[in-house]
Image 1 (cartoon, helix red, strand yellow):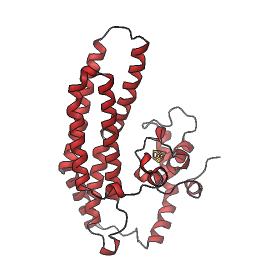
Image 2 (image 1 turned 180 degrees about the horizontal axis):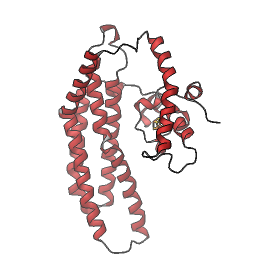
Image 3 (image 1 turned 135 degrees about the horizontal axis):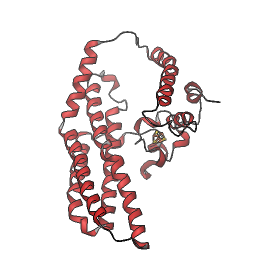
Image 4 (image 1 turned 30 degrees about the vertical axis):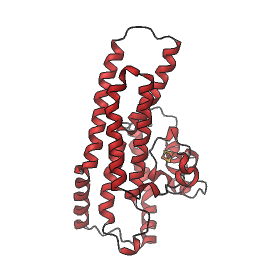
Length: 259
Ligand code: SF4
């Protein structure tokens, strides 16, 4: 029988909020069995091969039913927090919009978006070279191809996420500027989001280095991207000096530096 969101939320095995500061790579996540979002998605995967297809009507129906289930939870959360969610603050909405758009134009976000574009161009050129090779691969080549594919998967996973998470960090930082002084020592979403981006940057650098090791003839064309990422990492660390200290639920609590 399908469990509701409310049933799932009551499961003590789940780590509260773990999905807020992860990279959404559930296939590779060491905590999928302790994540409510993952469990919810599994509940929705009812064997229909098209259930995950974004254009599939069943998908949207399920999403709508989750929204209905969430409504009651939102009312309860708002009550707990003493917030009246029936009041819409137009000025606050406009402020938020402005902050989103400022974050989008920030030099960090621009640099991260530029990196994502460079990656697309690099792989377009790389695929052309690979497709032009008509030699059948031998056993050693196959192993090398697997390593390259693995590195490529990592690079693509974080390619856009690095920018997205930095934009979120920047925009959350502006929101946090409105916080009252007594909230100063609270964990900040800006730091958590910046940390997720920094982890994506480090992993991408590692993956590009792996590509270089597999493809010595591409070392020079890969080098600028590694340097671009390193510059981005250093600038992000400077702008978010507290990011590394942010404790992500689950990941940092359980794995510490091993993730
Ligand atoms: S915590 Fe893990 S399982 Fe949950 S959404 Fe994030 S990556 Fe997926």
